[in-house]
Image (cartoon, rainbow, N blue to C red; front, side, top):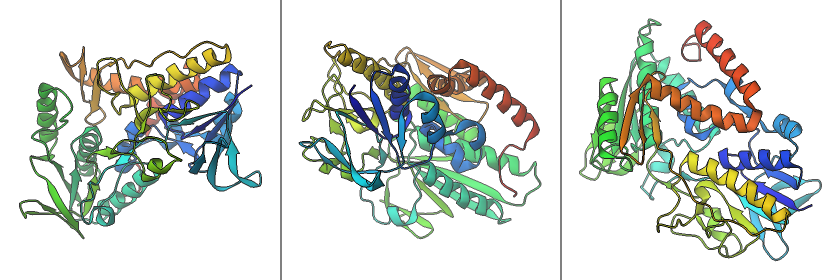
Length: 405
């Protein structure tokens, strides 16, 4: 029985250990510093105070006991490929090293500040649940102020767009609760349109909806510097921001570039071949945003949640093939389209490789279904159905967002 150590409990890592744990063919260990899993595409809801921690988060300790893998609350800090060990940031069973037969790295990506001066000191990021919770605490403080507050979001990718729409929804709810506070939400994008990686017609529909919701959208504006309470553009204009969130671009953590000689690219992604094995070491696999994985058409797998989910399912099957002595098959990403949520009742999505654009409440329900499919892998349909019913009842009984404002 091989020992498989999976580093990172995001969508890819958690789905992988779930599938491997249930198979019983391997000894599986998940190394993850957090205590609870939250689906990364929904971190903007945590930041806006609209996420349901009770029903939509998962305890690694409880889940591991139910599924059959071992959960170790620690972070990976180093690698020794010759000894086949990883170093941890704390002692586990009296040691700070852990042996593996196969290592899977699935630690995701973080926001890329492009070394813009002042950004790390004055802007918030949404790379983890802890950072999203920090953002919510700041938002909650603004909501209690009784004054007009300026929120500036840099980066009009999916995260920036969804956060802007969620905060605009919260702002509209303030009048229902008779609050004097109001939020002015501004979305800043260096490209000439929002969602620059999506079809143009989708970008246009998303921008129109954001503006209908009261969001100020500024495209073709590049941030040159961040100061306390202000963002400075390359043209010298200054935007006031009582809360400033940076959601522009991605890269992988710097420590990935120093892992005992593993080949990485310019944004610290580990280079893998079509079987998801590191080009440097065939006993090391990489999933999700951490991997630069080539495709037959010469492109690379995009850093999206559906790609991570597909890779996790594929790799779980490949470990089954390894156990049976079969050769590994290549991973081919199948693009199922893109859905961007603009509040709790509206979304815009693309299907058929951008040839079909859909929008409205139905597409928002599709966005929720994607999350439920992720939960289905973790829990099974029975519990997912119960969660959906409980959430609907709770939604009818509770206010729209949490916090006593």
